[in-house]
Amino acid sequence: MTDTHYLVHGVFWPAPPATAPVLRLQAPDGTFLETTLDDGTRLGFRLAAEGKSCLGHHRVHGPAHRDHVLCVGHAPAVRGHQCERCFVADDFRLMHDFHRGGGVPPGLRSYLMQQHWLYVATFASGVSKVGTASDLRKWQRLAEQGAVAASYVARAGDGRVVRVLEDLVTRDGGLPQQVRAAAKAAALAAPAPAGRITARNAELAADARRILSTAAEDGFEIVHEGWNRPRLAARLCTATARHAYPHGLASGSHGFTIRSACGSFVLVRLDHSDLEFVVDLGQLKGRTVELGEHSSEVPAVQESLF
Image (cartoon, rainbow, N blue to C red; front, side):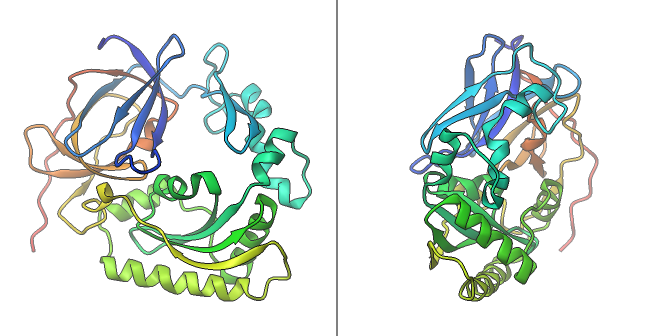
């Protein structure tokens, strides 16, 4: 059904034993299609509309129970990937102020009161961040972040405590809580050696644990636990010859074969070419596409000389 238009909800990593992420697509009737982005998968699409549409909002009923409410009328996105109405209705928007005394509905409170993890993640250039993950999404959170190496540094009894600890590591250790997707993509076009990334992550995780050891906060314990990166990310995180994808994903036709995936980033081979490129499929989130036998134009590039 190449004439069907799909609204892209993003790239998601299922929990192991799944080995590859999926591109989640919403059909006009509200049903969902998930395309597995494994090594050898060919993905072809064209942008079928301008701009981005709202992806709806969530009502949270507990740690493992939430409702995804689709946007009525497919309104344009004005706040991130939501319209104003869905932004206001989204339970998750309240979670970031919970540890500062912000009020939350009972379902979200139940979600936030589950066990949480504090981690330090390092990306392909060595740039790193501190972040949090709920117990149920402990592994997926880092997989979807596009981490190259990561360490868990604390296990907290609830989401309030873990966010207090996150702010402490940012304040006293200087670790940011966000790294831009564009910076992650640029780093994957020329990743640093694996040993350097691993050593940097271990150094920053040790610093974070030292800071946490002085925290005047109850309800957590310091942990020394590594994170296992998905095998499918190995090629993308290794310094092989590749280029940044030269085409914007806001328009046009695109098609390629996937070789490796890390977060929302994929290493792809274009049709009729041996060249490989780094593509951020996260740029498709909120956009409307039509699947089909589309191809990307092969750019004139000069292979690096070694």
